[in-house]
Image 1 (cartoon, rainbow, N blue to C red):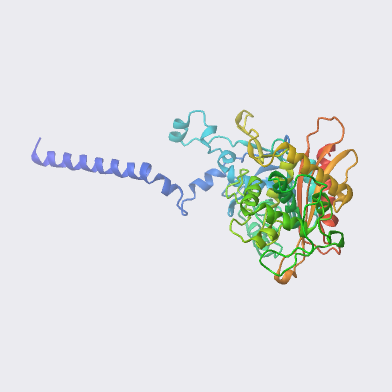
Image 2 (image 1 turned 90 degrees about the vertical axis):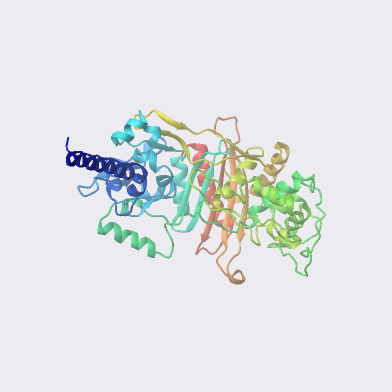
Length: 487
């Protein structure tokens, strides 16, 4: 071979090597960044090239997929979208995914590696597996009762099965229909813009992503702390709380909402039945900062990763306070703030004999053929108190419903415990109060129906009687009754 021929051959070889190097760089090392480049529509087109897996309530899908005849072959559809929006979230071709639609997106789109028969070959062949399904823990009857009870008010409901942590209802109002902006048309864009401009914030998940001062519902935590730490040993004996109670280090009296509380030495039972600020604030200060923080955290406060698997906002109980601030925090004021989810965990922990279970919104994940990918199991979150103390707190909450501010939650044939709360907020407390009710219920007889725990908050009501007992307790009652009676 001539010198020229050898040089030409060498040059061609170098070109082949260079092309191989470049192909490797693009297909291997830069594949991920190119795939997720905003200008690359291949993955977006691929993800909507087949029907999306479904979210189910019981055995019924509350989602679906519909052919579009457009650039994206399929778009998400919803059955009773506004009723389940706080659970499902939305899946939009333009605006992304939230809630379970977002957390379980890989399974629903078929890209989750657990769906593949042979993951390596599927990756090489770029095979797209059928989307899997997500079975939620939601009880349809409880969810209907929650959304109907809230109506057009700003508010939220969370219902939990205490023994397992399964979330039976998760409602936030005002709600929205995620199907109205699931596609990429002008109508979808208009629907999205309208929701964004709505001052009532229908896209805000008030059950998980909004924190509120819990008001007197937090007194359940304070009672548990006082009993667990020996500050109170007898529900009906004098607590030694003075009247008036002057906040430590100040000249400010902690006032009560009823004259029934305006006397010294009331018992813990009387203080809970009449929701006495002076007694419960005093007891919180006696328990002390460290032990109050510990009890609050047993129920989920200060946990930034309380995933269900959707991540809620962090509920707050301050870890640095003086004694007067501890007293105020112990009645759900000062900087104390909670999601309805965490307040439902408080009620559930009491009902479950002191054991707080990890809340969960998903029962199982399956492939399209119904075979199980993952089965969720109940998991203990914290042992908040001993069974003996829990029995005492159960008695306190039952007395609130039978003899106190929670009478509107009574259910025939069931034992019900609850605690009302009316939390002031706004500049100089001029805002419409938040109306709270947390509760649990169990059949009075020897049935197989497990107890249920509920938290309700009404965030902005035009009602004349803005109290937890007047507004929130009837909603909790309807949700608990739906669970206990199956509808």
